[in-house]
Image (cartoon, rainbow, N blue to C red; front, side, top):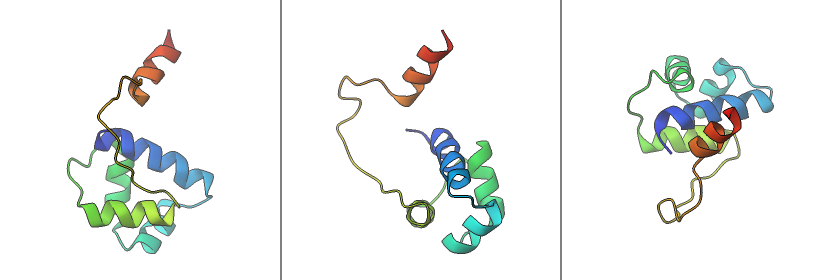
Length: 83
């Protein structure tokens, strides 16, 4: 998963928790500008600690799995749904 896709997923999860960008940024101790840039795909790099802080607030975790393992990626599934 790339950072742009992660940002979109974070936006969806944030909204499902009923949080504003400002509330998420306060709870995760990152700037609101960082949250905005992440969610809009403008953020090109983001440190591990910041990502983990955001995921923790949203009750998400980071898992390591073998690369692609023959399973479709989120992007594959989204593209399939457009057809």
